[in-house]
Image (cartoon, rainbow, N blue to C red; front, side):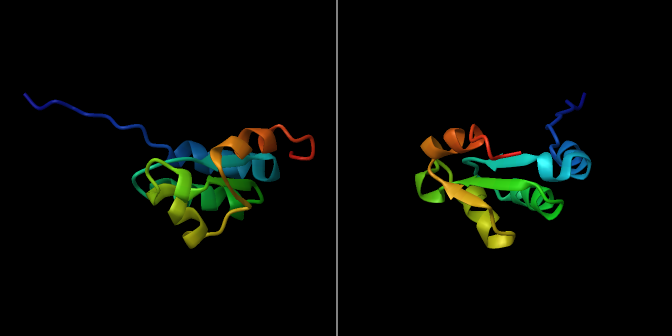
Length: 93
């Protein structure tokens, strides 16, 4: 008998959110071993949303946060300790 393995796919929900919420959506990429999420964060940014990326030099696995600025830019590239305060800033959508 073959065992079915299901992996969560974030592409569809992030694509839907980017289209629906546009400027009101904030995407945050943290540590990660592959660059897959960078494409979806770029979609959020392309639809007017805000893209934040953890500083790759401080990430446990830097492939994901390093891929975002290289592929589509990011509005903010910050140390982990500065991401939450920025998310709580009253000027953000």
